[in-house]
Length: 170
Image (cartoon, rainbow, N blue to C red; front, side, top):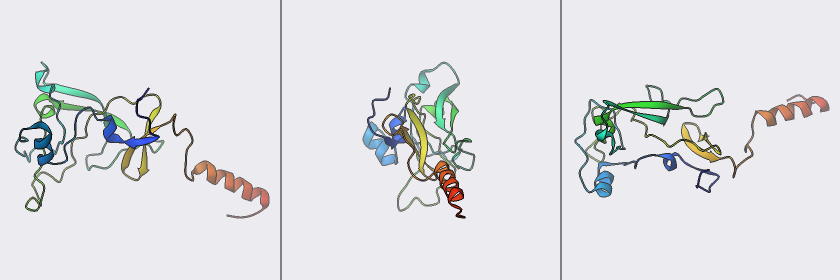
């Protein structure tokens, strides 16, 4: 069971590796400069320090939030975010690729493509991904938030049944 005792929380609580918003954040957290920006690779704000030690050419991560090639979030038939595998060459998995940001860093070549999603730990049986707002992924603890909240299809169906019994059209 998850040790997080909140009814809902951010996806970053599932990240396997630290996520660095900027090159400066990477320097502050690690004590060394991020590798030079490589415009031929997609942006990537996390690194797997053990990836370079593997004997394989590629590293496979079992759980990442699935995005389309254009960066759009992919959802399942239940309208919840889906998970997918991520396969990266070990040298790319082991390093960040953070584009420069700031006043003199607009229109950075290569930075407009979707970034490489961070790997996640497996969801616990009491956890599920959901979208509190369109396009935003969060985690819900089903033990602490067992009931669906907000107006949903079942509520609409119930109102339609009540209206039909009362002879009211909606």
